[in-house]
Amino acid sequence: MRLLITGADGQVGWELRRSLLPLGEVMALDRRACDLSRPQDLPRILREARPDIIVNAAAYTAVDKVEEEEPLATLINGTAVGVIAEEARKLDALLIHYSTDYVFDGTKTAPYTEDDPPHPLNAYGRSKLAGERAIEQCGGGYLILRTSWVYAARGRNFLLTVLRLARERDELRIVADQIGAPTWAREIADATASIAIQARREAGQGGFKSGIFNVTAADQTSWFGFARAILDQAAQSPGLLRYKPKLCPIATADYPVPAERPRNSCLAGYLVRERFGIAMADWQHMLMRCMEDTALLETT
Image (cartoon, rainbow, N blue to C red; front, side, top):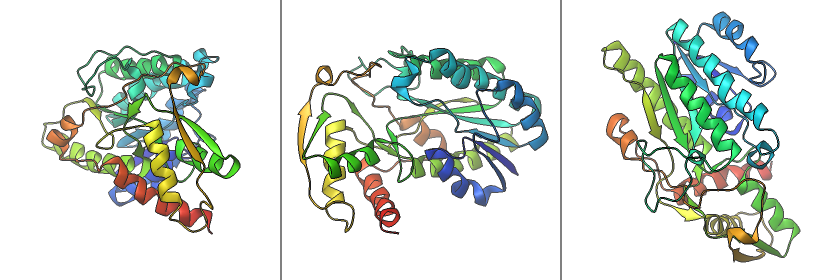
């Protein structure tokens, strides 16, 4: 089986290289080899690779910057995704694509299910929703995996930002009235591998059905709760943190940013458990394991 990863230099893409390797031949393409801002190049790249499964981990994810560059974000997250979906259909390849909690407005009081109508608040959410709809309209085999609050020991993310600021400041002001499920990139990649195996089995038996699935950590917290847990664990890891700064919970209104965020980013995970038997670990357990990786990278 041939698997192609786009966005291989991103947080999830990096982890996918390891997670997908046992499944077959893995072609991991970074932005230099496969630039979604040039959708006209994608048909040639995909036809030459002829993969059985395409895992699209490439995206424009700088949420606040997207407010200034929505046409570019829509090109990458929407138009290019549609091109990939069309080529996947022509190649009879399964497309696995990642989307986001930001397709919702966060006004629901319970976790969002896959059937809830999207209503994005910001340009990033609109661009990712454009990608979802482009995939659905192509008619090929696909699985859209929505996730949230992604972090890893590498790249740019909330965890690494908190650790950096904790070394520079005596006090951190963190938003406490937005809730979600911080999800480790490695767990997303491992879940993707399991889903890919089962999807291929379903296809072989004539029972595969395309769809959208939520893939996030279990349980929920706020950005403030996440930051507190990061600092608590960092304080126990030699070399990560000499002392903990004071943490101050603040309201969203006290931390103005260009892109409006949903207050509730929680996604229900029972559908992916029901179909693929995947029960994601809780966010605290994911964080503990990721911090072990972070400490190892920081001290080597």
